[in-house]
Image (cartoon, rainbow, N blue to C red; front, side):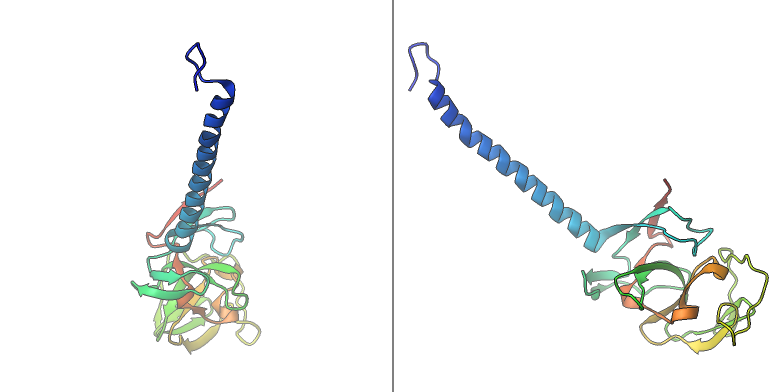
Length: 205
C-alpha cells in the first residue's frame, strides 16, 4: 500500500528489503562454495603448489623455491588413494617428480628419476650406471671429494640392483647431500606427479 505521497510506507519497504538481503547472502554463500569446490578439484586433479624445504635438489631447485606441479601428466588419479583412473604415460629417466615417501606416505618428496622398472642401477665411486652404461648429466652436483665405501654406506657405491615393476629409482641432484633411493629403496611410480621436463613452473620469493 502506498501513502498519499506515492512512496512505500516504511514497514512495507522493510519487508520488501528483507528478501533482497537473504538473496544476496545466498548468492555469496553459493559463490564461496563454488570457489572451494573448484579449488579442491584443481588441487586434486590439475596442479598443486609445493615449497622446496631442503637442498637435496641443488642447484636445480633451491631452498624456498615454489613450484606448481602438473598432477595429470602421468594420468588422472583418484585423490587420497592415488589409484590411476586414466593412465597417460609413465615417468621417464630424467624427470623430476613429486611422490609419496615410502617410509611415511603422508610426506611428499621431490627427486629426479634415474632408473625405471626393469633397469639395472649401479653406482661406483659416485659414477652412476644404468643398464651398465654411464649416465652423463649436467645437473648432478658433487661437493664432497671423499669416496665412501659401500660397506659403510651406499652414497657413493651402490648395487647393482634391478628396479622392480611399478617402481622408480630416484636421486637428488645434490648427490652428496640427498636422502634418496640409495638409502631407503624405490619410489612407487603410481604416487608420482611431474615437477620437471615441462611439467612445472618455478618461482622464488
